[in-house]
Length: 426
Image 1 (cartoon, rainbow, N blue to C red):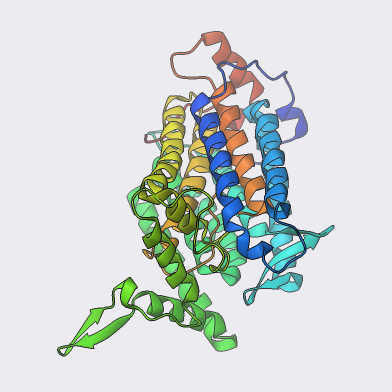
Image 2: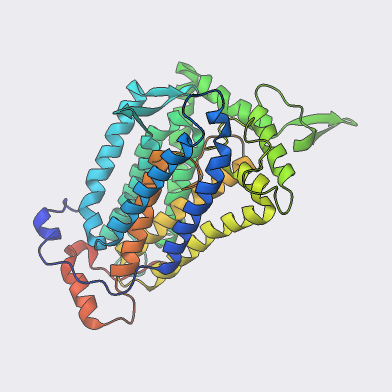
């Protein structure tokens, strides 16, 4: 791997001026999600308010403070040149790994696993930080190792990216299988778009399977409780019964409610109650009964109050973000900003799709916040960083066909390893 970057290399020249305005579509998506979040969190927090002394407005006021802080982060990062994120990557990644290691041994236990740590009374979930670290690290590695003979990257880039994914997955797996699968989906997407050969991807997949098999055997021999939890959730998701001598899958609406599946059943009831148009903001029937309605099941409350139409609007916002990022990436002159902007969008969009799939019954149950819409300071902070970085790249990364002077200024502001032309497969 190339040597670490020095401060002198990244600050040798003054940062070039912006070449465009921050992307209005990305700003619009961020603002729209914040508005929807404010409206729906007010309804979804009714269970949290009941029987407590925090007051009716307490949860929504805290959420508004978090969104205001996130908006400041987005604005601040959007005003920076994207080259500033190169030295930021290593520090942020080391911090997220250190916090994950602490949580693994000393973290607060939530839902049967160590998931968070508390600093000055504030709960921090390092797993959210690990995802953004993965995007930044993979972008660095793939930028450092371009294939000079044809579009794409060298085998070294695949090996280094694989080690990064395995390391971060090892930190995430104890907290839940969904975060690990999400990390794999993000990394595969970036490698495919970055031009990694199919043969290299297949080899990497084989290595992943081998390591996963060894890990599962180890977990089973030391403490099989986590595997039993995963298996129980999968079996409950694919609930079957025998009819006329054949095994058939039970429809979601025919599954009896029990203590173990109460969340899923109430979530389905909320979505069924919403229908096409919804019952209107503030009129949710299930928000007061559904556990974690303000976080892991916020999409169910959105559908109940805004209906199928509202759910599709939320889905389209995330897909729109992915499309805008792809358009920016495809026109960037340099590889690094193209990989980072698409990686950030993939991270947000895939996490949203995972959340929606879990809530709607497509995937087995697992906790996954809906970016910007679910309650949670760490999730909002990390999502704000991703939006800020995307907006920075939309402002400061030169485009193909742009002014030659802007392109020269950009190359001079970057370390030598980051001057390669964009070879992404978009």
